[in-house]
Every structure is written in C-alpha cells, then in structure tokens.
Length: 251
Length: 251
Image 1 (tube, rainbow over the protein chains, first blue to last red):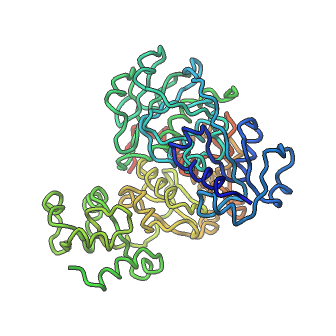
Image 2: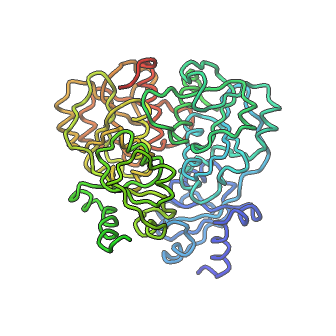
Image 3: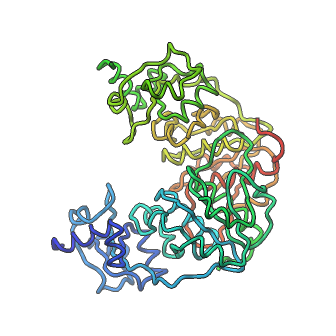
C-alpha cells in the first residue's frame, strides 16, 4: 500500500520545480522501462507495478527497487488518462555537459516549447545516432511527463542539455547552419558535421541567435504551406544531413 | 445574438456523424480563414466574428456571409480552450475522387489515427506541392477540429480522400512503395513518381495492404530508436522523394 507521502512525492514530480529540486522524474510504460533497464539501469530508483507485470516483464530487475502495488494505486500516481501498468521514479542523468561533436551534426533547438515536438526531436536524434541535443533554456523541459512519453524511451540514449546558446555558438569553430524560410537548399549541403539550429514554428530562430549563423538553409518549398511542423522540419533536415554517413554506425 | 439552435448546430459539427450528414465542418483562426478566403472562397458558408475582427481583417469578404457576434458568444461555439477571434462554418469540398497522379508521388495513409499526425502530413503534402492524399477509412477524419487546426490552412489546398486502399492499390499501374522497418534505403530511390504507403507508428502498414507492395523502403537507422513519429517519417520520405523535382513548381 502506497502511503500518502509517496503518492504526493510522485505527483509533485509532474512539476518542473520539484523535478529540479529532487533531480528525479517519472517514467511510465513497459517499453520505456525496458529501455531504461537496458540502457541506464543505474538511474532507476523505484519501480511501482503489479505482481502480474513483474511475472511477465520483471526478470532481471533488481528486486530491491521494485514496489508491488495494486491497479487502483497506479491510477493515483499516473500522469496519463490511461495509466500504464508500470511507473518508475528515475534519477536524471548526470549533468556533465557534452561539447559539440567535431565529427557529427549537432542539433540545437531555440525555443521549442511544444512537448510533443521536443519528444519527437529527441527520437529523431536517437534514430540518426546523435548522442545529444542542445536546447535554449526556454525549450520545454525534457523531463516533463508529456515529453518523456513522446520520446518513447529515446531519452535513455540522448542527452538533452540546456545551455546559453549565444555563448556556445560564439565559442565554437564549427559552421553554424541556421534553418529558416530562406537560405541555401538543404539538398545542396554536403558537409558531414556542423551545428544545425532549429527554431519554433511560430517565431523561428530568435534574432540574437540567428546573428551567429555562418550559413542559412531552408527546405525548398514546392507548394503553398506557410510552414512545416517543427519536428517534421527537424526530421527532414537531420535525415538529409546525416544521410551521406550511411554505412558508418552513429556512435 | 446567436440563437440556441445556431450554437447547437455549430457544436454538433464537432462530431463526425453530423459533419457527414451536414457536409459541413468548422474552421477557427485568422490565418486559416484568410487561406480559405484566398483559395476556396466558395466553400465559406457563415463566418462568425466580432466587429473588431472585421475592421482589421474583413475587407473583401462577402458581407452576406458575415455574422457579427460578441466575444462571449465565440467561447460558446469554439472547440478550442482559447477560442479564436473568428470561427466559420465551411462546406466540405466536392467529393469527386482524384485518381493517382502518373507524374508525381502519391501519399497513401493506412490507419493514421492521431489527429496531429494527420494534420502534419496534410501540411507536408501542401509544402511539397502534392494536391491530394489518399487515406484508409480508419484514418482520422480530416474535418475533425483537431486535424483542421493542425493543418494550419493546408486543408484548403490538399484534397483528402478516403478510399478502399486494397482496391485502389490493385488497380494501379504505378509502383507501390511500402514504408517500414525493412527494405531498400530511401536514399537509393530516385524515381520521380509512384505511390508511397505510410502506416501507423504502432502497427505499421496492415498485412493486406503490405501485400500490394512492389517495393519496400525504409529510412536507414543509425542509432537505436524503435521508431520515428509517423508524421516525421512521412516528412523525411516525401522530402527525399520529391527533392529531384526541385526547380519545377509543384502544381
């Protein structure tokens, strides 16, 4: 039986303030937990689930970390309208900042506030073998339950770093490709490494960030849509830019 | 002042059954209405808005179609948590079915049920100059308020057709490219026309549809994500497949 304090503690982790203070976040779902256990087992703090889930999926998981509860208790601690059969409190990864890679494309996000878009972009990085992304502080929080859900487990493999973009973009020797409505066609870029900056759909990249560009690139438009969804645009660009590297294994 | 019957009529159009019976749907937002008025003015039935919106944006719009209401009345008929300053009842486009194009890529969707994904894919078609998409009957309804919103006006320019995929894919002489986790690399496809079938993230393309494939294609994975968001995958594929056609103007 969960205590009131446990329920309160887990629910409070839905708020960024508490996630930052506690350095913990919440993960829901079988696939996600399996990814976590495979890729980052040390981050699992406590896994809340039922006897039947443990029988089906629990082999190998450290028993000291498992807390068996009832179905109705899952509902009390879930952030989803349809609670998953397993919910875990997870430590955030260590905060050591990765520098930009000299040998790969580096994704930089400016003001991506939609949780679904941020989650999709983390999956894109994971799909194309990029170990990290760099975000302006006003992007959505990667440990927000909606983002966590949208990453489908990719958050175990992609380090999401919040940084002062101006400083990092000034300090790098890499070319800085600013994406937007104008610039060189994406399909004419053949470099194998660099920094790709993606802004929000509504506002694009902020001026003070855009001023750090060494190149401007765009996805050529053949029709009339005013814009593409930010995650769709990110996917198109990362797919093209990493494509020449096919055959080599990401990381 | 809106009558109770008017409010009821507009609200009922949030349900597919009523949209199908009435052959009408609801559109919200300034940008969307401007697109509608530019591209499909004949489809506008009644535009509900305030005096101040009309002063700012209403020039040129047929006055007989305008119904001036108060702000609090907009809230009563809006499907959004933050009502737009303008809401319209719009006729669905005529139902004449477009055949597959012999000269362009044709996007076919199998079971895409997420409204946001369907809306994003309609924007992708619009961006890359494709005049229509073809959907299995179990895809989300393109006139569902969430899809309409996610298309950002592209629904004015892209015809969304619901068809029996098996029949259409059997009857075509075009190559049928089935997207999935296995197959030839997308980046090795250089054809300028064909049919691209995209399934849902969770389930992929159904077996009975996949059996109509003449080719299987995949987005090469360099990392470890289990899948990409369906709209992101669609964007990556359509961008690559239409890319050689750069320079020619879509339609």
